[in-house]
Image 1 (cartoon, rainbow, N blue to C red):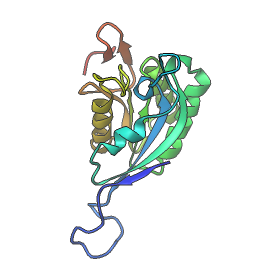
Image 2: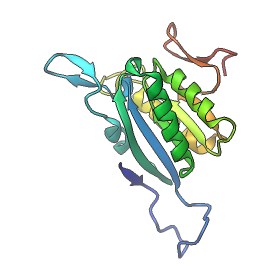
Image 3: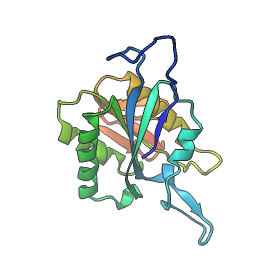
Image 4: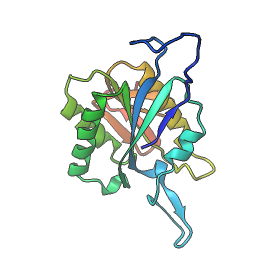
Length: 195
C-alpha cells in the first residue's frame, strides 16, 4: 500500500483540530489489473498483467489535498474474471467505503460493467461516498493512451460527485445501473440514455 499526501501541513492554521474544512480527503484506489496496467514483455512480445504501473502514474500527478491509499486486490485481465472475482472486489469496496471519502477501482474495461453492477447489488442504497470505476482502452505504456487521462478524471470525480457508483472515462461520468461498454465507439455508455 502506498500513501501520498501532497497537501502539506502548514497553511496558516496553527494546530490540528477535529474536522477542518481543508483536511485532505482519503481516497482508496483498488487495483484489479486490466489494460490500464498492462506492461510489455520483451521475452515474448506480448502485453500482459505482470506488474502494476499505477505507482508511476500517481507519481506523475500533483495530488494536493488528497491522501491516496493503494489497495492491490488482484492483477487480472478482466476477461479472466469470474463471478467470485466481482463479488470479492465488491466486498472490498464495501469495507473501504466505510473508512474513506471515496473509492476508485482501476479495472479492465471488458468486465468493468459487471463489477459495477455487482458493487451496486452489494451496497444497495446505503452508500455514503462515491465509488468510481475507471480503466483504459490502451495500456499506459503505449505512446497514445487514455490511461492517465481516465485516472486523473476519476481522482477528481471521486472528490466531487455525490454518493453512488459511477464509470468515469473519456471526459464522461455515467452512473450505475445501466453502464455498458460500446465496442463500436470504444467507450462506455448508459443503455438507458447517454449522460
